[in-house]
Length: 217
Image (cartoon, rainbow, N blue to C red):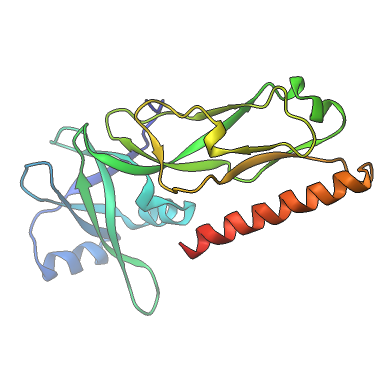
């Protein structure tokens, strides 16, 4: 399970409806609602500056949060929607969904590379080129892996690491069906043979195709 689930601190909002929401925005807050989990919906306010910073950091909607609201038990939530001002593109409301421990969710999990010093390709001057520092996995809310570990010992120049060659944490699977590239050992600049250069070009082309396919999805 992940070592740290980031906290998202909110205040319980008194009053509902458009009037209370407008007042929250005048007070520098973003109104929201927490729903699901066989409990009554909970209206909340989150400081605008805090939410804006989180949104700017990216992947707000694919991150599991530990919601802390005074007077209520901490609960794991994931964002289902962020409404924005049509002119200023600033957040005006958000919807958070409570998660059970057995709930299946898609999250980006960081990739850690180990034993680089034991890779023949790196010893020869090659470079570990990371195509995906994170991989989106389907996992349960109660058993989220902290990271994916990739052992690069034994890899030579132009060798490629794909998702199918990685031992994924138990109970997880990639959200993408095809066998996509995670990393490769690139040849050192100016030291490749003609054959190595041609093979490297083929690997690079494959990477571009894989990333492009994901964007189209």
